[in-house]
Image (cartoon, rainbow, N blue to C red; front, side):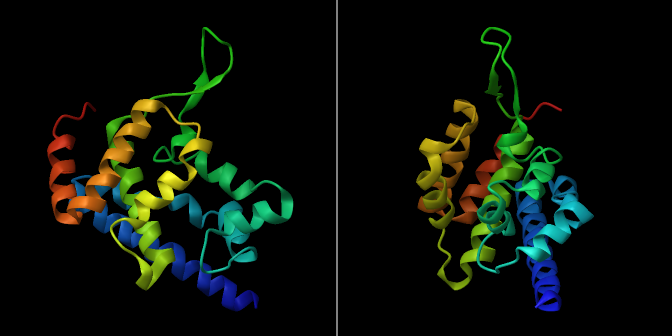
Length: 180
């Protein structure tokens, strides 16, 4: 069981990462894609991934089901700015944690990540609408900056309605407006 989980998890995160790299290349952020999710190979994330590996969804969900939280996810989101959960800070007016608008480069990587995750986990059942359906299903429970949410939803809708080729062409044009 442990050996099957070890190689199953290793294969899943590596296939996912390579797919994100391909999508980032199409989006014009290749080097950013090369750095995508390297923390998943760190002991804190990797061994939790092996322990809670299921093959059809994130092991973080398995860890969360057992413990009520996922230490691997807490580690991961704190080191990877392509997750909207990374982008929270104290609001100076309310003195409470609040979502912060994500820089465009990370919204693009988040889009690439979500599409790749849908392809990896849904396998043959994947459609260009899969990522949008997943996004909309959890939208009311998500704490994300409204502008970040709107842009991600726009890209996912475009993918659903117009396909990858047109969406990545649009993203490359959008990327040309990025500030570094």
